[in-house]
Amino acid sequence: MLSEKDRRRYAGIEAAKLGHGGIEYVSGLFDMDPKTVRRGLVELEVSEDPAPSRIRKKRCGT
Image (tube, rainbow, N blue to C red; front, side, top):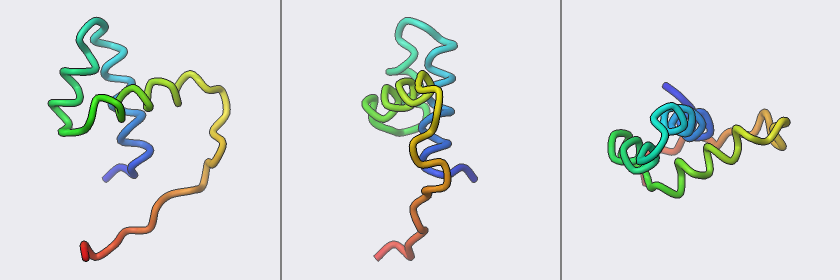
């Protein structure tokens, strides 16, 4: 199970591998917004993670 940040970055990696049309394909495959995949791509280009240990707490769905 990946954290939200890791899932976004993984989607960005896969979209980059696919090239043209990769963002739309991966966003549909992972059921996430294309903006989220683009954000993952941008985060991969940054050399240092601004918040390396920050992960949202899991909620009970209420």
